[in-house]
Amino acid sequence: MKQNQLESNAMEDDADPIEFGEVSLTLGLAESLLGDGASPQEIADLLHNAEGEGILDMRADDMGWGQIFDTYGTTAGAVMSRLNANEAEQARSLIEQDRRVLTS
Picture (cartoon, one colour):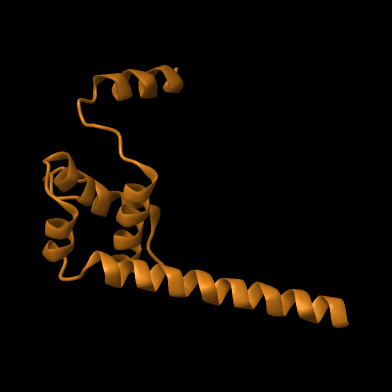
């Protein structure tokens, strides 16, 4: 039943689907604003809320990414740099863990 409801809601939505890059920008901005310890509800509210002021709400209203990032006082470059730095740190950590396992 839930699956049919989801499909029905998706079919009624007039907004264009977002691409992978837009998903990265959206979630990167949310993570940048909320930090790593945000609850799923906090993230959901930032993405879409009843007031229509969420990141996805603004995008659905044809607001450009530059305008959206300006709204939150940051830039896409700053957010993506932070994401890339986090990924690099995670990779270094995993390599170090592997090295410890292999040498023990």
